[in-house]
Amino acid sequence: MTRTVAVLTAGLSQPSSTRLLADQLAAAADRALRLHGERVQVEVVELRDLAHALTDNLLTGFPSGGLAEAVETVRRADALIAVTPIFTASYSGLFKTFFDVLEDGMLEGKPVLIAATAGTARHSLALEYAVRPLFAHLRARVVPTAVFAASEDFAGSAPDGSLSARVERAARELADALQSDGRLGSRTAGAVDHFADPTPFEELLRG
Image (tube, rainbow, N blue to C red; front, side, top):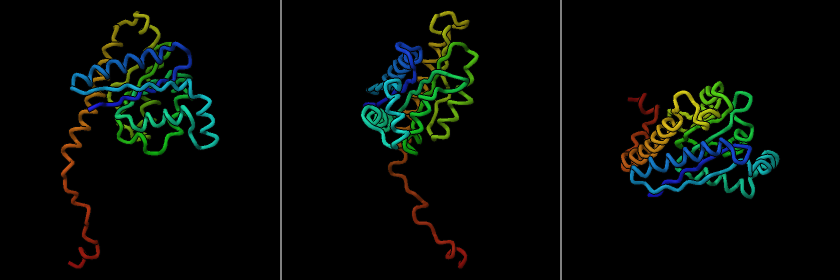
C-alpha cells in the first residue's frame, strides 16, 4: 500500500528554514513508514508560490490553477505535515489563509504533524497556543509531538542538539497514527451498527 504524505510549507524566502525543517520531517516520516513496510509518496506544497491565488480565492470563493491542485493534494493525502514560520507570536497569514479556503471537514480525522520555525526559541510555545488549536478546530488528529526549530538549531549551536531527536519522534508518531487508522478500519469493516434502526421513543414509553 502506498501512503501519501502532503507537506505544506509557508516559508517566504528561498531557501527558507521553514522548507528545510519540512524536508527533514518528510524524510523522517518516509523512513518511519517504510519501517512499517509501507510505500510512501511525499508531495510538497509551497504556499509562497500560491500567495496570489489564495487572495483570488478569498475574493471569488473558488480555487484555481496551482491552488486547486494544492487543495486536492491535501484532500487525498493520508497524512499532512504542516510547517509555518512564526510571525508576531503566531502562524503566518499565508499559512492561515490556506486553511481558510479549505472546505469544512476536509481535515477531519486526518493525522497531522505540526511544526514551526522562528529566529529564537522564545516563540516555541506558539505551536501550542496558536497552531495546535487551529487544527483542533479543523478536527484534525494532531500527533503529540510538535517540532519547533530556531535559527540556532540549524546552526548546530542549540544547547542540547535535540532537533533531530524531535523530528524522528514526531515522524514515528505520524507513522503510528497512520497504522492505527488501518487497524481501526480492519476491526470495524464488518462491525454491526446497533444504532442503525433504533426503537422509537413512543414505543419505548408504551411498553
